[in-house]
Length: 107
Length: 112
Image (cartoon, rainbow over all chains, first blue to last red; front, side, top):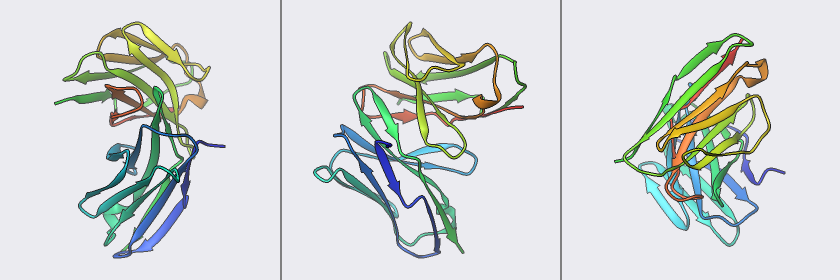
């Protein structure tokens, strides 16, 4: 069992829809990351959070430490948001990645 | 500010050829450095990490090796590539283990 589980694995939505991607982890963390991987493979770090909520533009990340759960939300989704979104937990001296959620926003 | 450089961005190599991927970090000293691989359809997997010059820890036995010849330089190598080495390789650094990771832009390796 992967220590970091994401859902859904794939998500297709219409432009403008509110998107939620979920991440659950099984071990306590020092930090949780949300990453965006573009079709060409390049990875951008979106958020790093250890508690509460962070917002950047149309992206919102929340984390519930007690429930070991985090969510990434995208408001007013756009086709350029199409990418793979990866959740990763930092712990000990290494980081464990989820398998990613492939998001496709239709125009 | 701190930056991380990884190159090349893409690489196509024949089976049996050697490999050298380089990652350098600027703007910090004594970073913790990491190499990850993402095989097709799978999540990112830790290959190596280093907490200092010459200190390399391997997570997964494989056809690859890593070296850290300088404080801010991390190199991933292979003497003879296998088809199964194809994938996306990502370098990362952190100042504190388990926290504050910054990622390189990645290298897509195709072994043919």
